[in-house]
Length: 564
Image (cartoon, rainbow, N blue to C red):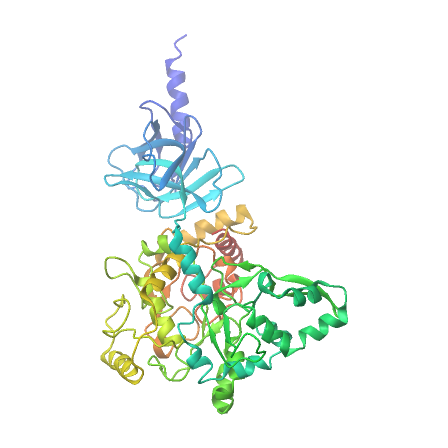
């Protein structure tokens, strides 16, 4: 019997089903442009899913393994086989196809599982990737055939001695802002009379490693009445500040034997550093307090109610309007333009959420800009945009005697826009009123390296299957990738429509597209903290920024965001 016709019949049936395997030779699986289809490599290591209507014409799709991978030592490390995908008859894609590759190993954070494609310039990651850890498969979206390989990419982080020096500056340096917070606001007067319970209630963090042994013994002991008394005693607050245990606060004491502060300043750590809380047994039961080891991981101190603390200082207490404004900020927010003698004053109440500090090495390579309005951005070589921003913060926000934006400044400002003449004049007038510069350039560079040393945290638990659906919503119907288009999900888009209430004052020009990696760890959301949860964020966007999403699509999208 001649079996050839039966063999041909089998091929025709496979084509009709629009499935099957792309062979390791010249055989191609036929895919209908109208119906789309799924093609699997002969060894099962690669699967392509082409949506209906994506192909420009019916075509044969071939998948063949090849012996080519990213070079050793590159940022992208091969994590599986490499495959070449080709279309017959010059067919092209009008919509992305889904590429799924088997990986050898699940990456360990801060390594990420992605897909890279080869081009004339080398290997680049696909714009969108999702790693399915349950079976070590990585899924990506590709807009053209080509050469693909599963890779591991590690979030970049600065290392070296400068990082340790920068961390020390970040934790402890005031650059003399005691002259403002003590001399003008009278912060020390408040601290001298503030109980530990009031301090931690306002979000103050206490480094347990620096708590004097006597106080530590009381807090960890079994005498509940003594613990309660210690938490209500302002003398304990003063002792903690004097020991350097209060994160972000630097007290000035006339001499080592003095128990009362004569001035006080603040450091970056006040709003940007947390401790790991400790549970203490008190008369009211087990209570978690922000007293513990430092957790320097880039997460903002979202409990810090700086406005409430500053509202109690003697200077602010003389102005009922300012008291109400500061007390209205809420935890985790700060209005950088609100305090006296600030050239940035915009006559608008604009408290903004404290952002996370991580992934800056990668973000700087992905058109990222700092501050909610995207004002600071690399515009020169070398890229000192973070140092430039730090100088502005120390000078204009933290009220050190600096000279940002003038000839006496430390770093040439690296800004995304040309400053208006009115701002330049205000900066010059501020320097004339208070000449000199106490900010040290080398320390700014160290702070820049420290901030570049932190990567986002590993995702917490999430529903993997639902997150994969959300990945498709993010890149498909919702088109979130239209703004969050880079590897760390940022982009050049600046918008005034991000929140239900349009930004005002100095933010009226719009809010930048923030990076999304690690977003599950940074609630509340938006520059004004107006969305308490990721579900709230999606609700704000649905039908307003993106098409109306179903309840299931919203849940999937939230789960995907939790996976980043």
